[in-house]
Length: 424
Image (cartoon, rainbow, N blue to C red; front, side):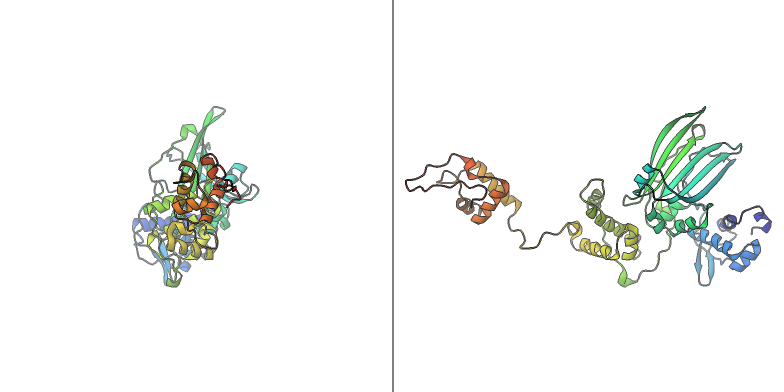
């Protein structure tokens, strides 16, 4: 166990992190075997000469990392805890500095108003404050090697209780586990980086990297701007840096069987169609929101656990009633069920093929035993009513007169009338 003297000189804000670090090491080394009950909060507080709130903060951090779990009888080391709580590529915001033993990392979390381009990416008003996180990495001589500034979309705070707690605990909140929190909440983060070389600041060139993190339905949830000294920079990418297998999902609240949504089991073709609706400028926002609901329902059910409409509603910023409606429509009619319903009245009885046939006959064929078409002749040939033929001609601006010259009138003045707009 950590001795009390090892906490000397640490601030009240980060003592819980030192305690959590020692407990984490004890769990990984086997000094606290899996399934073993940890000492009571009162005992831990006395051991480290801290109050119980500090102990609870340390245990909460271990719970967020999947190392312990709490029960009415106490807190236990979790079975299956391994030696890599933060696998490569899983730490936030990440380091772009060549690995160095003598670096000092400082960070702070606060609310700030982002720049206009950052606000535009996150889809928030330009003057709206959001949760921000700054991390600075120095070498032993005090030279600044990396400066990163992150801003988070409000909906990410709403979906991650760990981030919400970090927003309220003060400036020294540690967000290194953010990607794991997102995976545990079923958000499937995807990162996109844009790299630029900045003009030299004196004799020191820098790299600028903008990283935007989206979830599985394309929402931008976090944006980080890195500024790294080029001589110390190392950018390494792998094919799957955010591997869901490397993170233990956060236990979800129990869902009653009566409230659970039936699994949708999207096919690859259906998923591709819905993702196309989310592309900028594609169809309408109402269809895009329906696609988000269905995709979120399918992704949440992928783990096999029951899914509640309320949880999906919070994730996509919709109502529980809307989630239940579009989930039900998709379950009944698949993608077609998400499309706008036809207007009231009798269902359409004339197909597009029949309309095309009427237009082709009118423009390119001549009727038997007559110089040009009338609505009655066309009706007999097409198997439709004369009024339907008139509506087709009017709707497409087609006149039988375009098929040839008008016939000569008889002495009685009878002849084929020109059928155009307004004629029947």
